[in-house]
Amino acid sequence: MTAGVDLSPKAQAIGSDEDVVRVRQLVRTVAVAVKLSLVDQTKLVTAASELARNTLIYGGGGNAEVTVVDDGRRRGVRIVFADSGPGIPDLDLALTDGYTTGGGLGLGLSGARRLVDEFIVETAAGKGTRVTVTKWSR
Image (cartoon, rainbow, N blue to C red):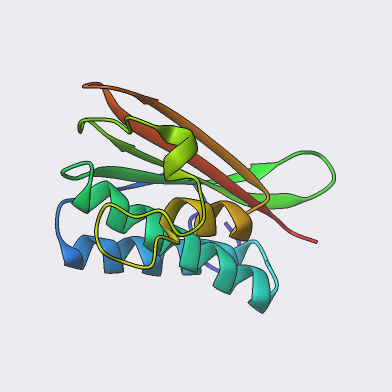
């Protein structure tokens, strides 16, 4: 426990806009508890918001699991977004700045990737998508 915050892994279902807000709140709470800087908190919450929205819109819903990680030198926050949707047909294209299938700005995946320290996407047609992001304290 840090400052009264339970830092055990937390899962949040993503099935509605309200759940996207809950993911943001959870990520902010954990980021503050592990003492990420305000800038890094904002980057992580922004990335989490984009990825939670993608999970809802493109994956048909899923879940996010927020975990505190420690590599012996520093602490950080790892979030895994998982869905059982159609998968991403062309990951390279989807990670290209400006690419969008939703009529938005196209900053979702590529923007989220720039905001975090580690970014891993696992996807397969018909099998869903799993995006793992980590932000480390400085």
